[in-house]
Structures are given as C-alpha cells and as structure tokens.
Length: 294
Image 1: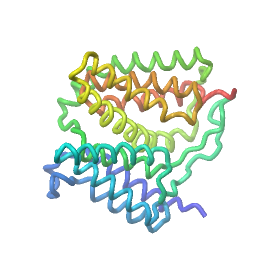
Image 2: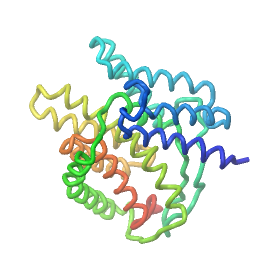
Image 3: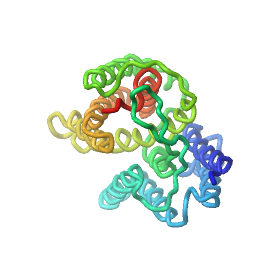
Image 4: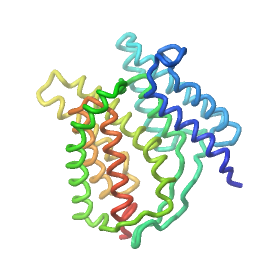
C-alpha cells in the first residue's frame, strides 16, 4: 500500500534541507561545517528509514559521501583530497544512476501519457539522487548569500539562459525529438518540485559545481584548459542520460555546454540550476514531454 503521508513528510523535509543550504549560517548555532540543513535532513532520514524509503544498508554510502565531501572541503593533503574527490564522483554517479543499494524511491507518476504522441512517463521521488546535490553544495561549493549577489547573477544569466533554451529546443525540433504542444497537465506540480530540488540541483552540483569547476582548475595551466574542462563535463553529463537514447545524449550534451557556459560566466551554481529547471519546464509545458514516440 502506498504511504503518501510518510512520503510527503520524508521528501518534504529533504526538500527543506536543500532549501536550508541558502540560509546564512549566522542564523544557526550549529558549527559552520554543518549548518542549518542538517536538522531537516536528519528528520527526513529518520522518517524515510521508518517508512521504508531508505533502508539500513543505505546509511553506509550516505556516511561515506558525507565524509568524502567534508574531507574534500577542509583541504587536507593532496592525496587525501584526490581520494575524497574520486569517492565523491564515483559514489555520486552511482546514486544518480540508482545502482547504490538501500533506497526504495517513491513513485508519483506511473506510465502517464503527458503529450499526444508522446511516450509514457514515469516519475520517482529520488532520495538517492537528492543526496548528491545536498552534500556537494553543503560542503564543496560556495552559494549566494545576499540579495545583491542574486540580482547580479540574474541580470547576467537571464539573456544567456534564454539563448541556451532556444538553441536546445530548436535542436530538439530539428531532430524530431519533440514538437510544439502547449499544455498544463495536472502532473505539473508533482513533476516540478522534484525536478528542481532532486534532479536539477543534484545534476548541476555534480557536473558543473564539482566536475567542471575542478577540471577547469586542474587544466588552467594548459592552452584552452577552461574550454576543455567545460567540454569534458558536458560530455559526461550527456552520457549520463544514455537511457534516453542517442538523441537524448546529444541534446543533453548541448544543454550541458549551455549550463556550463552560464556557470562559467556567472561563477554561480544557482545560475545553472535555474537555467536547467527553466529549460525542463519549457519542455514540459510547451513541447512534447518527455519525447515523441518513434
């Protein structure tokens, strides 16, 4: 029997934990290395364990990821930092691909036909995937903290995001992946919330905030190192969408280049998260979702 109340509380507190990352640390008496986010996360984890969305074996990878992010952030010796970085990447990919055991993600949309001529769509609330964004942003990446920073970021990012969205959508139309179809189905809200907090935050944290950032830092000493870091992170992002087929890999790679370009221009992970979500929302509301049947 589906336990909707327990799911709402579990994933609701997980969402609050992610939102709390942007609450300034000075409003909390917790140590800086933790922050206010830890409180709703512990509540979410406890309820998730009791409701069966998270199982005891999951505590090991959760602990390892948290510790790896912490040790990476405190800048220990080069060897420990390299080991922590490798653990972060490998474990994050496993969590994004849902191959790390210990999670029973809650299904909220099952084989729904969102668009005329579109393939059936299923949506889960992915607890495992959300952990990636939560821990990387909590320990390994600076976040915007003031109104002035947000305004400056939005002014720079808005026209760039518009260009990226236009390019990706036009490419999708040319490839026959989607077609124009305006709609506002009842599934929108249950789709939008996890798409923003559990998908976009997680994917941008890993591929832009961690991989692209540190690849570009490592390659800055060579010619076109910044471009190479951007391309490598974008290709990895595209390959991570292999389940959608070749067309989806191509579109995701192009989108990743756009998100990475905006991230590079703004130095703000918030800009790539918002661009990613806006493109997804435009796709959902104005075009075939998730894709045309072949």
